[in-house]
Amino acid sequence: MAWIEPKKSLGQHFLVDKNIAGKIVASLDLSATDRVLEIGPGKGILTTYLVKQAGQVFSVEIDGRLVTFLHNIFGDWQNLSVIHEDFVRFDFAPLLGDGDLKVIGNIPYHLTSAILFKIFNGIKNWGKVKGKVHSLTIMVQREVAQRIVASPGCKDYGILSVFSRYYGDPEVLFVVLPGAFRPRPKVESAVVRVTFEGNKVRPRDFDLFNRIVRTGFGQRRKMLKNSLQSIIGDLDLKKIDFDFQLRPERLSVEDFVLLSDQIGAQLGNSSD
Image (cartoon, rainbow, N blue to C red; front, top):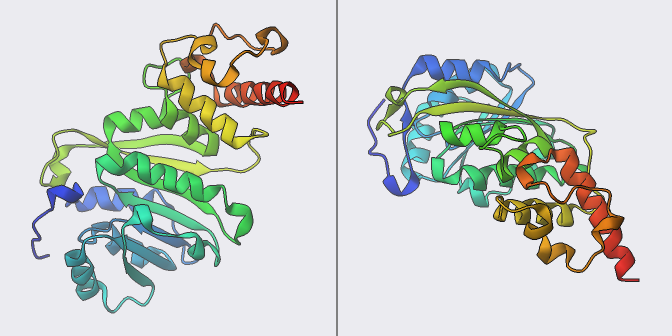
């Protein structure tokens, strides 16, 4: 493959280790009927495996140089669509109209949260389309991976952890060392998979739930009765069956949902 100078502004670190690439794609357990959405294909090292194993691949790339490169390399593959878009702004909902998607990508570290929440927000619209996102498999900075999969009580547990567990089941598949990339990043990476499942506990008011999680972790060292003051105001906490002495990192997703529903009920009563 010809060398293309990575753009620092885009956070580009090209994966060059074919063994790692094959291992990542193998984790998707693809069949000829699967549809894959690839985030930032770069020079196509993952794409090479995807087009051979999946029924249809949509690769979204922001860098016009790489779009041209990919068209030249994969022009004969009828099951590949290279889309010149910024994934953060790309509307992938129309793709779901034809069925489920498995999402994969070696993504820029600085865009991890934006990309995760774009997928999460898309999942909220499942009921409006035919298909859904089956899973998200991404390569991220190892420290961020630890935050994505962290459990309540861990120092890494936070907003990313709560919403990853709210929407699915996150797990770290394996660690990838800097030598697998060009240029070499200064940190280790990890491949994380979030498998999205239905029938999980859901709050009555998602917007309130979202606000409580974000507000709570905005002052994570404080007890809930203090960190959530802007939400609970003058509510009589004795009427809410919850321990407001806890700090947010002690609460599971189910705890946050329960807290949200109870606060919501009291806020509703107080407005009557």
